[in-house]
Figure 1 (cartoon, chains in turn orange, blue):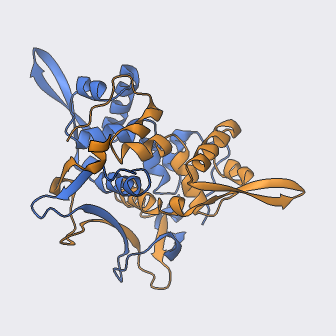
Figure 2 (tube, rainbow over the protein chains, first blue to last red):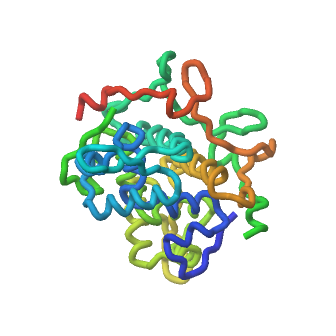
Figure 3 (cartoon, each protein chain N blue to C red):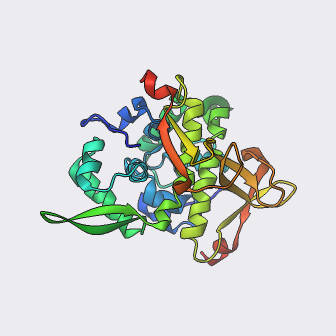
Length: 159
Length: 159
């Protein structure tokens, strides 16, 4: 199924398209945004630490963090350090982004890691590697792109 | 595990970081790039059709397509239509991006689809919905971000 957009759609307007891939991308599909989210999962919380750990400019970082807060992916919480400052924490909605990052990692390990995985992501306790598996919720079979067909759902009629 | 980047890293330099999330994002984590890939999965192949189906400028589209070709995600193949033109097709490496898109869709359906899923992605034949499941490859348990711990792998030592 091909989705047709208005010819003059701006990137941010993807958020109103009847497509649950486009809508998140309107928020996340921006340079640095996923990388910021990744750093948040790695435990980075403070503006200065995001800035020091990435090569991003302060204004761009502020813009990205604000958008992530606005969309409820990060929360901005005060902490005391001399004067009051803020730290950014993943909300539950943010934490649910994790399978996307691991799906990216799986692809990266397969296609862009000639020396082997730079990082292991292991199940705490058990020690097995965490992976993303595309599967059918009915028959539980592992499937690929060619096994899937798209059709309009209820949210398409509403749009 | 926090990854520290060189303070002046440019976005494209993420490709050389010892991180299999950052490396793909250096290629894909750009406005429109994932959306172009999504359209390719929906069957769009021709420059004019990408352009007509998205709101992107011609120069930006050309730039994104070229980068996807350069990284082996799309192939550029001639077809005859009056004068010879080209179409862009997902390679095997490109097709392997599909679980990332479905992971984004899963999150979008949960968090940005108040009227229900705009699109069903169903297992051909069986008819069950396709979903991404984050699981442990050893014990096969479904896991979440809090169940995973990161540690350096062989590719970190090489870098």
